[in-house]
Length: 140
Image (cartoon, rainbow, N blue to C red; front, side, top):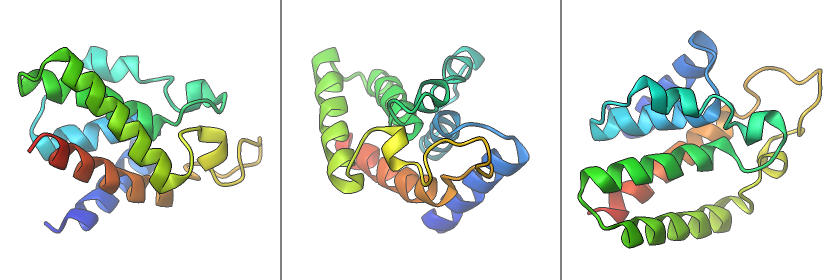
């Protein structure tokens, strides 16, 4: 399946069918693509990672990817310092590409009671592709 179609289909499913947040959606798509089984504890740990529970802090698209970089780095037997450096490079590149790491800046319309659900779907599809390509290239 073509990568962007895979990403778009998975984001739609995880957002609209499963009502998952952006961090869990990112983790699940990365894990599916790279063939990693995630424990329920890992998924549970990301429950509040969508801008720190909608506080608007660090974006869940970033947080989910940082978690996955640590998981994938361990699977690949990468040393801790190299995993940390990879996270640093990822954050720099994400910020350069999307202009921020902060949810309240990235999220269209910010956070308001009358926002429609899953307002970040388009951004998520774009960012997940960026994240997937970053992980692929960083560990190849």
